[in-house]
Length: 443
Image 1 (cartoon, helix red, strand yellow):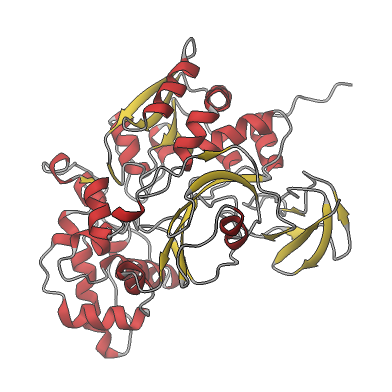
Image 2 (cartoon, rainbow, N blue to C red; image 1 turned 120 degrees about the vertical axis):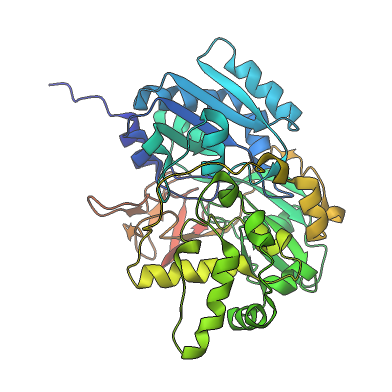
C-alpha cells in the first residue's frame, strides 16, 4: 500500500523551519491553517541590517517557490511580497521571479517599523488584526522572506542548517553571508575581517529590537537576522546596558508625561490601546513595595521607538512596557480592553524615516550596504542551543562522543508540543550536551 504523501506542513516541521526574521514561531503551524492571503515580509526595518534584501536579490526564485507552496498549502489565491522600494536590486530580482505567477510585489516606504505584522497586514490588505490577535484571524499568513526560502528547501527534503546574517557596525568589513547555524558571532566576525573596536558590544538582531550583550561567543541561531557591533562607550550602548532598576528610577523621577512616546507609537497610531506614557506613570506606584502595572502595555510590539526616538528626556518607556508585560503574565492577567480599532488620523504624518532614526541613534558613520558574500564560513565548532524557537526545547537525540552527519536531526520535540527540531549543519563529533549541543567538525 502506498503511503499518503507528506503535507507541506509536515515537511516543514521535520526540516525545523521557524520564523527567520527574529520571531522564531514554528512555520509548520502557520501552514496547517487556512487563509486567503500570504505575505512575504521583506520590509527589513532594523537600521544597518541587510540580510532580507540579500536573500531577495540572490534567492528570488526560491522565495517565489516558497510563496507558491505556502499559498497552495493554506488555500490562498493572493500572494504578496512586501519590499521597501529603496531596495532596487531586490525589487528587480523578485519582480522577475514573480513573472507569470500568482505572486505580486508591493512596494513599501522607508520607515520604521514597516515590518511589524500589524502594520504590514494593514498596509497590504487594509485589515486590522484584532487586539492581542494574530494575522490568521483576518485570513492572512505572514512569513519572513528567508523563512519562505527555507520552506522551498524543506519541500525538497533539506532541513534548516544555515542562516543568512548581516555583520555590521564597528567591524572592519560589513558583510551579509550564510553561516552554519551555531557559528559564534566572534568566529563569524573574525573570519570576515575582525572587530573595529577593542571594546565591542553586540546588538544581536539590531539596535531597536535586538538583544544587547558583551558575550562575543553568543551563537547564531535560526532566528538571528544579524548583529550591529558598537563600541562599549557608544551612547546607545551605554543606555542599553543600564540596569533595569536604574532605568526605572530615572523614569520615576524625570517623566513629565509629555506623551511623545505614545504619539509616535506605531501601534497607537494604528488605533490600538497602547499608551507608553501611561505605563510610565506606573513607576510612581512602586514605592509601596509591590510592582504595579497596567494594560496600556499589553499590545506593545516592543519596537523601541518610544525609548530610542520619541522621548525627549531619553527615558525608557519601552523597557517599562516590557516589564509590565512580564508582570501581567506572571499574574495571569490578559488583555480585556476594547476590541474596536480605528487608525489615528495622523498615522501617515508620524511615520519615522530610517535615515532620521539613524541620526537619532548616532550610527550614520556605520551606514554601509554590507554586500553579499557568496562563500559560506566553515567554523571548526558550532554551539546549538536546544531551544531556538517559540515553544519548548529539543530533547537531545545524541550524547557526547557521537558521530553525526550533515543534516541529521540532533533533537526531537515532544508529541503535541510547539517547537522546532535542530539539525547538524555539518558532519562532526558531539563534544558536549547540556542546554546546548557543541558539535566539532570532522574531516
